[in-house]
Length: 446
Image 1 (cartoon, rainbow, N blue to C red):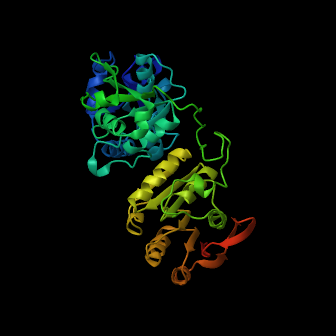
Image 2 (image 1 turned 90 degrees about the horizontal axis):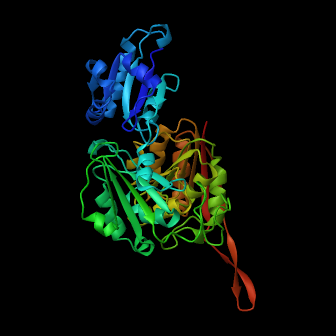
Image 3 (image 1 turned 90 degrees about the vertical axis):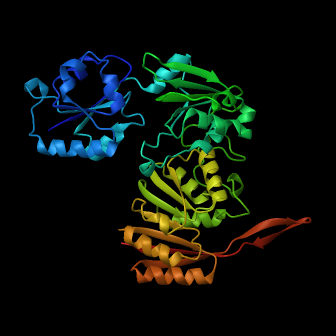
């Protein structure tokens, strides 16, 4: 088998194993920046003729695929074979790096990862701080503006994350640079109350590396060389401990209590009462019969209550929360941070248009359709090979359209009407007040 060796460089000399692989390699691929870094290694001179510079990740993957298909199989190094394909990476390739992509493209059996130290390790060593309680995030969306990755968190999420974690370490890029991060913090009332201090660690591992410490206001007016890493620390951190990954904090709930199902409406940030009521949410999630792993679409996600509860119940499920309203998108972001639901990706836009490029779902919940439930179901049908759609309908018209469209597309359909009355106090006594009934339509495609 032709192995692909992904070798991290930038911070320390190569060990005996990686040195042998590089010296015996058939080709060495690197970006322009890493090719320059590699020139500083003693192994460069003997192999410089093998180095090929490709500055685009997709082109690199395509080149590797074509190369290994056209190269005869070779025996292991110990039997006189060559080291195969070498791809140079920055630091630890498995830390927000090319390692994940390579394994996804070529499989674990074909890929070997040889890490250097990570830039985060170096950055914390330089500022002489521990980082065992640090929240790690990447704002590196890629160099091509047309192909930038959707990121789990963005700039606007940082102030809320600071409320939850004593320090944050951020991988940056040209767009999400230290100055832009500082501007968001300097304008945030949340950050103002925490008095954060920022460290910008420029060109780590280079001879001209530089560490800058300052307030967001100071950093916002500066420019920095690439590559760089940002560390943000709270001078006055929250008085409570940070929750474990995957846990959240809501009203009446102690941190780390482990509550995954049964969150209350008043624990979610929402607007104008637009939230799936507790009892209806419980029925909808039950009807979905969610798998442990897979892809779940929450269309018309609103405040994100269904997405949040689903994500906490099934941490290995990839949840796409689709919402067009800017205020509601903000609510979802806040709730995602509050409840540490990192397996939620927020898709801002109108369905069905934004559904086209999403991964094929295993389950779909439609909580809001904007009057287009028929078109949405039609798009879903083309992407849902086998699975369940659940539609919540407040009107008879939406109920009828959903039933007709699901049956037209050969789904097995069942419908429940959820009528809820809640006890409330009146004077010295109690009575029950009815909520609007909701139809829960389930379509199963086998």
